[in-house]
Image 1 (cartoon, helix red, strand yellow):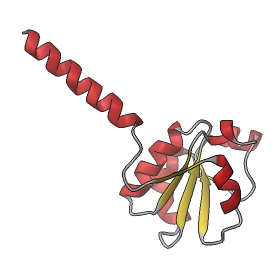
Image 2 (cartoon, rainbow, N blue to C red; image 1 turned 30 degrees about the vertical axis):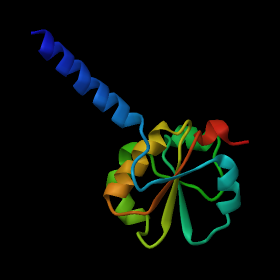
Image 3 (cartoon, rainbow, N blue to C red; image 1 turned 120 degrees about the horizontal axis):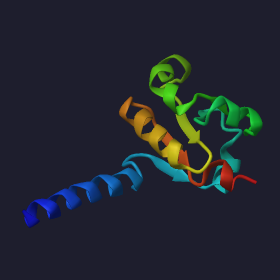
Image 4 (cartoon, rainbow, N blue to C red; image 1 turned 135 degrees about the vertical axis):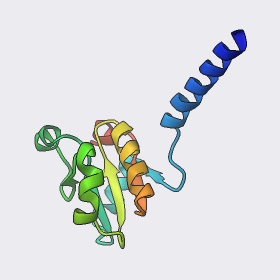
Length: 119
C-alpha cells in the first residue's frame, strides 16, 4: 500500500515539473531581446492574453489571439513560414501557447516574464 502512495506522488510530481519546464524546440527570449526583434518582418508577434488585458496594454505590432482560441485560429491567422513570437502577462500562458504552436508545426519563441517584465 505504501508503494502505491509513493507511485502516485511520483506521477503527480512528474506532471507538475513537466508543466513548468520549457518546451523542447521552443526558443526563450527576454523582453530586452524582444525589443531588438520587434521590427523583424520575418517574424509574427502574438499576445495570448484576454482581449480585455490586451486592450488595457499591449506592444505595438502584436496580434491578440487569446490562448483559449489559439488552436482554432492559428492556421487561419498565422503563417508557418514565419517564426511566431508569443507573449502573455507573466510567461505562463505563452509557455502553454508555445507548446500548442510547436505541436502544430510552427517555429516558436516565448517571451520570458511577459508583459510584467516589459518596460
